[in-house]
Length: 128
Length: 401
Image 1: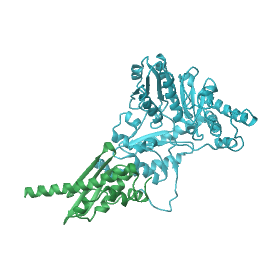
Image 2: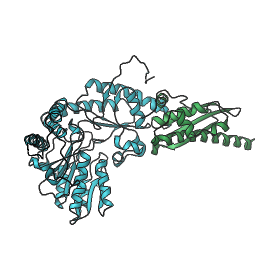
Image 3: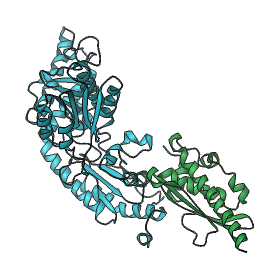
Image 4: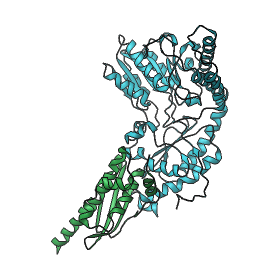
C-alpha cells in the first residue's frame, strides 16, 4: 500500500520531538478524525533553523510530518509557505489517494507554525 | 530502537488476522482435488458423470446440515459466500413478504453485507431500525421488544461480530422475534465452526455461513432456510438449488466446504479450547504491561479466536504497520472499512469515542498460531506503543518519562 520511502520515514522519522523554546507552534487536525499534528519551528535570519513535529495518526500522517520537516528545514519563511501537499507526497514517492489528506495536514501544520511565528513577532513589536 | 533494519534477523511471518481470511485445511484441499481434476460433471446432468457430481454435492450439503443441526439437508442452499447469503436472506424475505409488513430490524454491530442490503431496502419502501448495543456489544433486548411491531417481517442479528467477538444471546432474541411472528435471520459467518450452533434449539429461521471461515475454500457459502420461510431468489436461471439459487454449482468449492464442516464438527471442541487458552494469554499480555489499554467486547462471552484491544493516544494503522515490520499480520478494525478512513461503525456502536475507536487493534487467532507466537507478539507490543506514544501530541507527559 505504501511506498518504500513512506515506510522509511515511518520507521525512522526525522525531526520527531518538541522544541521547548520554539518561535512558532502550529497544530492542525483533530483526534476525532484520527490525525493531529503539531509543528515547532525555530527561526533565524528569516530561515527555518530548526523544525520538529509530534503526530498522532496513521503511517502516512507520521511519514508526511517527517518529510515536511526535511523539506522545510533551512528554507526561508516565504519558501516554506509555498510548500504544498503535492511537494510532500511527491517526495515520498506518492501516497494512496485515500491518504492524500495527510500530506495536506503536514503542510498546513507547517504553515500554521509560521503564521504563529509572524503573530508573535507582531505582538513583540506592539509591546516594544 | 525498536524497529530494526538488521538484514540478518530472520523474517518471521506470524498471521493473526484469521477473521480476514483463513488457509484451506490440507484435508479440505485433498478432498476438493478430485472434483477439480476428475469429476467435472454438472450435477444437473442425468448421465453417470453428472450423477457422481450430484452425489458429492448432496453429501456436502448433508455435512453442513449436521454441523448446524438443520432439520434436513434440503434446508441448505449453496451460495457464493456470506455476502450473497446475507443479501439473499434480507432482500429475499423482504421482497417476498411485503404484503405482511415493511419493517426490518437489525443491530448496529452488523457486517456491511447486512447493513448495506438493509439500507438498500429503505430506498424501496422498507423501513430499517438499527438497534443499539451496550458497551460489550450485546443487542439491547428491551429496545428490540419496543421496535418489534406487527409490521416487522425480518430481524437480522449477527451471531458474533468478528471485530469485537461478543456472542449475542440468539435464543433470547429468537423468542422475542417469534412473539410477533417475524423471521429471525442470523449471520453466523465468523461464529460457525468455532462455537456450536443449533438452528432448531436456538430458534433460527435463516442462517448465513461461510466456507472460508471454517478453513474451507473462499467463494462458497450457504444459507439455511427453515421450512415454511417464504423468500424470493436473487438469481434467476436454470432453477438449481430448488429454484432459489440458479447457476451451476461450484462443485470443488462445495465439496471442500462439506469437508471443512465435517472437520469443524469433529474437532471444534478441541480447537476452540486451545484457541481460548491462547486468546486469554494474548489478551492478558497485550493489556497488563501497558497503561491506558482496554479490551473491546465482552471478556468471556466472546469468540474463541478474538482478541480486540485498544490503546489510548495512538492510532491503529500505525500499530498495524509497526507489527507488520516485525512480521506480525493483524488488523485495525475491519479490513473492509479501512478504505473509508472512518473508524469502524461496530466500535463506535459500543459507545467508544472516535479517537478511542481509532486506537483499536484486532488479533484473530487460528489453527496455526502457537503459544510461542503469542508470546512473541506480547513481547513486541510495549515497545511499539511506547514509540508511537512518544510521537503523539496527545500522550500525557508523565507517560513518556
